[in-house]
Length: 189
Image 1 (cartoon, rainbow, N blue to C red):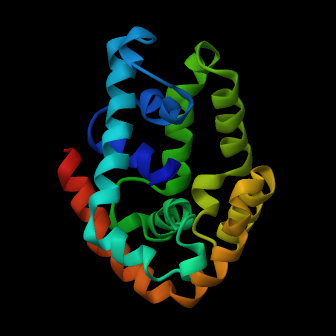
Image 2: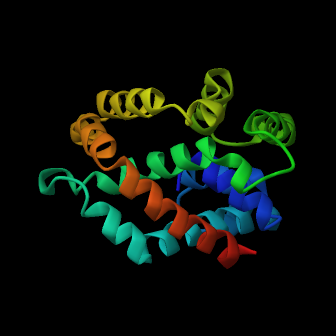
Image 3: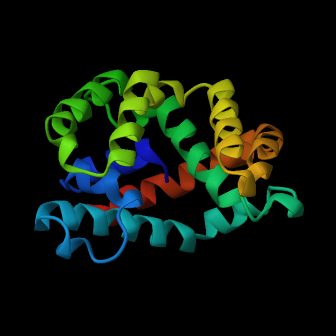
């Protein structure tokens, strides 16, 4: 799961949005670094990441990628799941649009963001500036994200090529998402 899914699942679980989004920027025991509410959110994020990797649907989805690209497939799948969530948002949240959800999450995070790591601040500001949550609905945006990640991290250069696997297996990945995501929503309630 990527940023949109983590924010959405945090909302469902009534968990800290900051904790759930800062998790990738925190090493070690979060309870030694942050208040319990934030640390609980970090732990929920980590739990979601562990759970998702164990689902049969994720294992099936990885097999849709060329064998030479399966090492980076989990990273691509995180982006792909956000694509399907953004594109099909109304099936999971009938109370607000993705755009409204983005505004709400910004209002809850922005006042406190200076208390967290600078790379987290940069990431969140880029997300809001680029309207990623809304733009994930676009297939072209998924390609841009994968290309950007591949350029920033040379060890992950194959990410840009996984876009081909995503496009070629779009219908199967969509089907797997609709099997997987409702289970995640129920598990974290």
